[in-house]
Structures are given as structure tokens and as C-alpha cells.
Image (cartoon, helix red, strand yellow):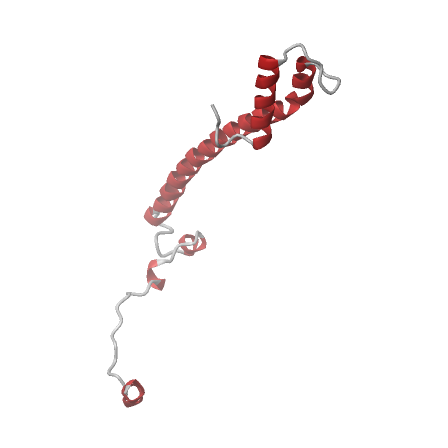
Length: 126
């Protein structure tokens, strides 16, 4: 019955309405009938419903965005492949580099050779 994510004010409203309806349905309290109280406090419920609908809509938009991004990634990859395979441009062209990729000639091999340790480094370690 109690939703742990439900706001405390909404749990209290629900509890008051249930008790009022069960124990004193015809009573006028604070100058209001039960129906008048429900009408006076229904905006809290309506706003929460609109928030729920907006969250659901936002979730749907996020999914739509993710799907569009996936298509964009594929198109970008296809375009980069086209530049790399083009006879005038290729993977070593300024255009390829302007796209944010590293042209072949600008790449480092990644191979590094460590030189012999100098005597000052070994003296510092001791």
C-alpha cells in the first residue's frame, strides 16, 4: 500500500481521505466536506502526474537521441572510410587530419627503447 517513493505529503493526504471517508464521511471539518478537501488538494496529485508523464517523455527522447547518435556514428565512420579510400585524399591527407584523426605520416610507432640508466639515477635510488 505504501509506496516508498511516494512523497510524505501524499501519503498523509491519502491517509486522511481514507480515514475521513471511513469514519466520518458526512462530517464538515475546517469548513469543508470530504469532497471539497479532495478538490482543494488535488493539484498536488495532478502536478505529480504531469511530472511522471514528463519523465516518461524525457526517457523516450533520450532513447530517440541515443538511436540517432548511433546512426550518426555509423555515418561518420562511413565518411572517414570514404576519405581514407579516396584517391585524392586518403589517410594521410590534411582533410583526414582536419576531421580530428591523426594522418599516417604523423603517427608515432609507439616503439620506445630505454637507454642505460645514468650513474646519478642509480645513486639517487641508493
